[in-house]
Image (cartoon, rainbow, N blue to C red; front, side, top):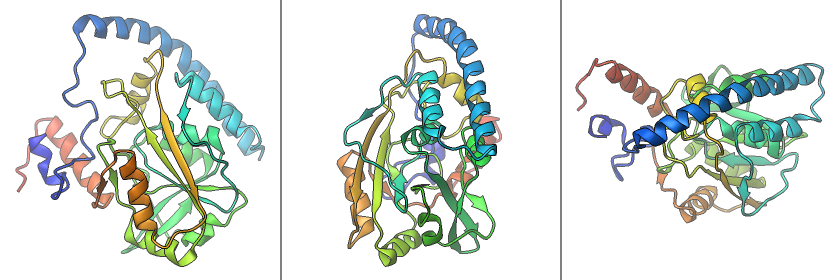
Length: 291
C-alpha cells in the first residue's frame, strides 16, 4: 500500500505490518454464508474458551501446570485447528531456547499445547535489550495484543534460558504478516554466539489470507480473535528443527526461514509501533504526509 511505503523495508519494498488480507475479497454470497455460520460457531466457541482459560488460570494459581499442554490442545481444537501440520516434530527440553516467528495469537496457544514452555519476550532497557519471562496472566493478555515487548529492567538471555522448562522467544518482537520475518536483534545473536547453547527453530505458517485469517498486524486483538473463530476450520503449518549449536546463528536462522520462503527483513520491531500509530490515524482520515 503506497501510503505506508515509509514503513516498508527500503531494500525489498516489503512491509511486514500491513494487514495480511489486503486486496483479498470474498463474494457477497460467500461472505453472508460465512457470517451466518460463523456467528453460530462463535456462540459455541467463546463459552468453551472462557471455561478453558479460566481452568488454566485457576490451575496455575494453584501451581498445577501438568495440564497446561492438554488445555492448550483443547483450545486449539476449539479455535478450529483440528490438524496442525508439523513436518519435523521435535521434543523441546528444559534449558533449550525456542525461537519462532510471530504473526497470530494462535502462536501462543500452539506452544502451550506443544511443550508448555516458559514464554519470554524482549524488554526495552535503554539502548540495551534484555529479556523477561512472562506470567501466565501476561501470556493470556497477549492473546489479544499485537505488541509484546515489555518495559523494565529484565534479565540476561542465559538467565531466561537456563530453566527447568524450555524457553520460547518470538524473536521478531511483534506480530508480522508473513510476507517475510524481521531479523533477530543483533544483540540477541551476539549473546547466542557467546553462549553456544542448543536452540530449536520453529516456522509457523498460516495459509489463509482472507479477512478471517489468523494473522493479525493491525486489528483490535479481541475483535480479531472473534473473527478467526468464525472459520469452520483453520490451518497451521509448522516446520521445526533442532540444533546443538552453530558457528553463525544469524546465518542459521536466515537459511532456515528462507528455505521456507520467508525473506529476512532488517528492520527493528519498534517500527511496528510507529506504523500502528500512523495506520490508526490514517484509518480515521487524519492523514499526515510521509517523506
